[in-house]
Length: 569
Image 1 (cartoon, rainbow, N blue to C red):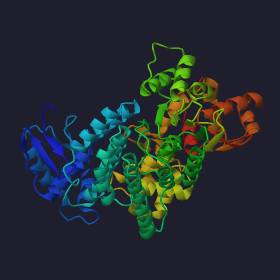
Image 2 (image 1 turned 90 degrees about the vertical axis):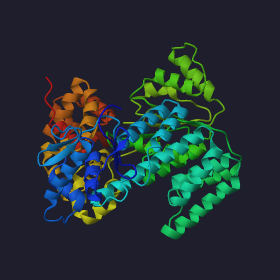
Image 3 (image 1 turned 90 degrees about the horizontal axis):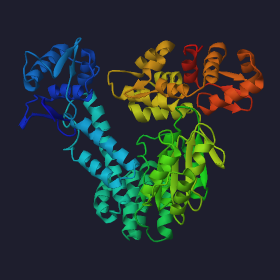
Image 4 (image 1 turned 45 degrees about the horizontal axis):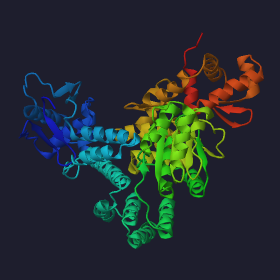
C-alpha cells in the first residue's frame, strides 16, 4: 500500500509504520487522532477539535493541549518532523493526510461498495467474499476506550456500519444456499440484538431452508413476545408474512438476490409501504412508486422489496433504467438466470427469452428510475412474477401506483432524528423544525443535512438554520460527499429541451410556487394547449408536480433552483 503510516479505528485506535506499531499516546491524544482520521483529509479548526474532545465545557488550556497533542503525534507519525507530510497545520487547526487504503474505515467502505456492485451485477459469491474481507478489518468495539462526545457519537455510527455489513453478509449466505452455515452466526446476532427484526427474519429463513420449520416459527414467537413486553409493539408486517409462508409449506431452495441493501435508517412512509406490501403479497402483477426528484421513490421501493421478498421465493432481479437501456438489462437478466443469450441482440427476442426463463418461477423484478413506458414495456415479465417500478410519473400499463410527495412535518422530524441522532432533535426541537421547513421537507435534502449534523459534534441545529437562511447559499449547503440536492436537480434539468428549460426558469422567476395552466399560459405568452404539453414534460422530469388537473406546483427547493437558473437564448 505504499509508504506512510497505517491506522485502525474499527477497534482500539492503533497505528503502524511497516511492521512496527506506533506509540499514539494517552486516550485524549488518540481521541484527537481519531477525529482527524475520520475527517478523511478534511481540515478541522481548533474550536471544532476542542468541542469534539471536551464538549461544551473544555478546560481553560484546551487549545494549548491540542498543540501538545499535535506535537507528540507528529513525533510518532512523521518520517521527518522538519517536513511534515502526514499531520499538517491548517489555519488554527489540523489536517491529516493518508494515501488510499491506509485507514481501515475507508477500506471497509470501499470493500462494501465493491460488494454492492458485485451483488447488483448478479455475482453474489464475489459480493460475499468482499463483505467477509470488509468484516475481517474489525478488531473490537470501534474507538474503544476513547473519551469525548465525538468518540461516543462515532462509536455508535461505526457499530451500525458493522451490523449493516453483517446483515448483508448473511443475506448473501442465504442467496448462495449456505443456510445451515448461517444459522449459528445469525443466532448469535439475534441474541445480541433481540429487537433488530432484520436478523430475526434472516434466522427464520436460515432455519426454514435448513428444514427446521418449527424452530423458525419459535424465533418469530419469541420476537413477538419481546416486542410486546419491551415496546408494546407488534412485529413488522414482513415478519408476519414470513411466518405465514413458513407455516404454509416446505422450504424453497436458494434464489437470485439482486436487491440493493435496505437503508438501515429507513423512516416514515409506513402507510405507503404497507399498501405496496399488501398489493405485492396479494397477487398484483405490477405496482409503481412515483414522485418528483428527491422524494425517495427508490428508497421506498427497495425497502418494500425487502419486506415482501419471501413472498417471491425464487428471488429478486434489480435494474436501474437510468443507468442501463432495456436491451442491456434483458441481457443481464438472462445471464443471472443462467440462460445463454446466444449472440441475440434483437430486443423483442431478448424479452421473449427472459419471459421464457421466468415462466413457472415466482420472482419480483424491481425496475428503478423508469424514464417512460416505452423503456419499461419489454421488461414486464407476466406469469407468476411481479414488477415494482419507480419513476417520476405513473407509467402506462401499471395498474397500481403510490405517488410520493415531501414528508409530513412529523415524518420529516422523525427521519432527521433517525439520521442525526434523536438526542440532537430533543435538545433543539424548534430549530430542527425550522431546518426541516427550510429543506422543504424533501427526503434527499433532509438526509444530507442530518448527515452533516451527525458528522459534526460541534454544530447545532440552530447553526444549520443560520447556514440555510440565506437563499443564495441554501442549495450549496445541501451537499455531503458526492450527494447533493442541486446536482440531482441539475441532472434532470440537463435532460430538458430548450422550451421546457426556459419555461421552468421563467415561471419560477415570474410567478409563485403554485399556479394554474391559464396563469402559466399568460406568463409564457403561449396557447394553453402548448403550455399543457410543456408542463406535462416538467412533471415527467420530476421538477414539477400536478396536484390536480390544471394545477401545478414547484417543490420548494426546485423553485429556489429554477429561480436562479441562467436564461437560455
